[in-house]
Structures are given as C-alpha cells and as structure tokens.
Image (tube, rainbow over the protein chains, first blue to last red):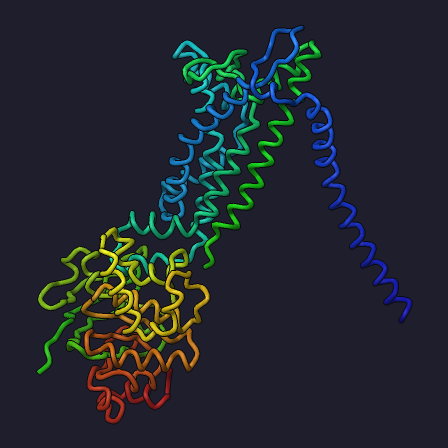
Length: 281
Length: 252
C-alpha cells in the first residue's frame, strides 16, 4: 500500500520535473540567439552607426541611417494602409456573424494569413513594380500591409466578439445610431485588444524580408521618396550578410541587433499598453 | 380619468417563425407603474423590448401591429427618436466600463455628440443621481470608473443614465433579478418616487414584486395577454383561471 503510493508520488514528481525541463529547453534557443546576436552586434554599434549611411567597401565608419529611416517609412505607410482597413473589416466580421459576405471574408482572411510572404512579394512586383516601371518603397509598403491585414482583422474581430451584447444594448437603448455605438462604445471598450493586434502586426512585418526583395529593393543612399527604391533593415541584413566583405558583415550584425531590439521593444510596449488600456468589464 | 401614454393594438412579435407575442392590446396610463408578469418564456421581455424597438435588433426578429406613444405609432418613427423618448433599464446592470460615473450618467448626451455647457451637465448628473438615490453614495467619486460600485449601485447608475435623457416612459426588464434583497428593496422604493415624473413599465417574474410596486398588472401566458387590471383586483380577484393558477402557484 505505502510502497504503491510512494511509487505514484514519485511518478508524479518525475512528470512535473519533465515539464519544467522541457519548458526550460524551449527558452534555450531564444536566449542563445539573443545572446549571440547581442555579442556580435553590440561591438559594431556606436553613434555613427545610427547617423551614417553605408560607406563603400574599405572605408571605415559606415552606418545604417538609411535603412533605419527606410524601415520607419515603409512600415508607417504599410500601417496607414492596413490599420484602418483591418479594423473596419474586423468590426464588420464581429457585427455580422451570419452573412454570406462575412463567411467568405473570414475564409479569405484565413487563406491570406497562410500565403507565403515571398508570394506576396512576387505579386506586388507584377502588379505594382512592373506597371510603374520602378522599384519603390510604396510597393513594399503595400506588400507589407497585405501581410498585416489578417492579424489586425482577426485580433479586432476576436476582441470585439468577446464584449458582452449588453453593452451594445445599453448604447442602442440611449438612442445612439449604429456608427456611434461602434465608435464610442464598442471600439473604446475593446481598444486594448485592437491595439495589441496592431502592435503585433507591426512587429511581425518589421522583420519581413521576402516581400521587400522585389519591391522596395534597397538603396545605399538616404532616400525619403516613397516612389523610389528604399533601403530597409531586413534588406540591408540580407544584402550585406551575403556579401563577401567583412565590413559589411559587421554592419549586418549591428543591424540585426537593432532590428531585434526594435521587435522586442514593440512586444514589450504591447504588453504594457494592453494592461494599461484594458477596460474592466 | 388618467390619460393613456402608450397603447398597443393587435401587436405581434416573432423570432423567425416563432410567434412569441400574440395579438396584444393594452393601454398604459401616464404616471403609473405597470407590472408585466408571467412565467419564463411567456413573451413579456420581448413585448417590453418591442416598445422601444430593441426587439428588431436581434437577427430574425420581426413585429407587426401598432404601438402608439401619445398619438404617434412608434413603428412609423425613427428608432433613435423612440429610444430617446422611451428609456430602458436591463436585467443585468450594464454601465459603460470605459466611462466614469459622471460620464455614464450623461452618456446619452455625450456619446450622441450633444454638446452641453458644463453647468448644465453638472445639473443633469446631480439631478439624475439624486432621483435614482445614488447621489449621496457617489458624489465624491463622480470621476472614477464605476467598477467599484456594487451590483445594486450599478443598476441605480443605469437608471440614472436612463432618466438623464428625460424620457417619457421607462422600461425596466427584470431590473432586480440579478440583485440581492437589500438592493432590490432600494430600487423598488425608487420606482415609487419615479412614477411622479415618468411612466414605468416593469417586467418581473416575481409576483410579490409586481404586487408591491405596481398600480396595474398585466399577466402574460404563452405570448398572450391573459389579464390586465388594477394590481389589487388582479391579486385578490382574478377573472381568468390561468391568472388564478399562476398567482396561487399552481404553475410557474
């Protein structure tokens, strides 16, 4: 009797230990990547790294100013396109659960989420770059905005679906028209969920390379024109890491660290804002 | 003779093909409390929600017949005007969680984009909260969110929100069913005061409550209005055997 119970307790402890070990094992690769990139990248980063554009091979002191600015511009334009469209689509899906349009729209969103990013890049190339005859930051932004859409739509939809109907009824009973019910009650109450979806989608596309390869293309100079090719962080890393020069490898390592820090920061901000803006129901 | 404020003729309501309110004819006198009672699923809540046209918001819900507010058919009016004139309090307290207590009370103005001077807003907030017997409890916390309030206080906040719009009729859909006895009695006392200025229609499945708070009572059974009379008469000398059975607890 006693021996049997001891055996069972031992088995239970063993299982617990196994879950802990495996949980730690999941974190190891992440820590290892972070540590390695930090080690390689931190020595290359200094003030000039952020303010200079890349120099030709052999000249010391090149930086990633153009890529940093380019990334900010490309992502901002992508967000300007994807966020309003995505949120409105999410509102539609959460408000109309049974219509045919909602069904097909939801299906398309799911399929879109599964489309490989390189395919989106090629499509943007054929639909935007070829007809206009030039690589451009705008075409890259559009490709990225397509990648953002499913994340924004789904997170908005799921957040709003969780809000109780009683809230909407309260608003309707006060004589509010539909658009005010949505904009003044439903969206403010779900704002933390919507925001976190938006932030995650930005973090997601910040590191996307494939859709930019044949659209934003890259550019070794500082450029702010969205109709011209533009350098971005992932493109710079891709181009410089595959080059044969050590100076350029250094730039790529530094840029990797900056990109990683950026994405990490976005995730942390998301966590904080979600908690802060959370509406207690 | 009291004047009639709401009257219905041949009113029917449906969920899809399900006929839930059947040919209801009823006259609601002004400044009265009218209780609508009946067993679960008898269509009393649906009927109530038809009066301010909340029923039609549910997919598949339809209605026909007339409901007159004074001399106007609410089904010919725009639902927004109907709901401004006929306020509603729900079964569960549902204050807006993103707004302060103050903003909750004037939500009907604020969220509808009606601009008011600050003194006017202050006046409305104090007046409504006083009427709903909540002013003394929250006057020091007006600009805090309402989550710390108890269920009963939240329900009184919802009543304040409804009467802030100065409606003519106030619909209450089992306003105390989610509350404890103490909160229930404070809300019942409140109803008594409110009828001086408003006409109240209260849905309840609690017979004692109907007897306590109402001037007239309507008894619904399986979607039909079985009996509608003075509350006293109804509870002491019901005409219909179904009413009698319900009141004496032979079915529920």
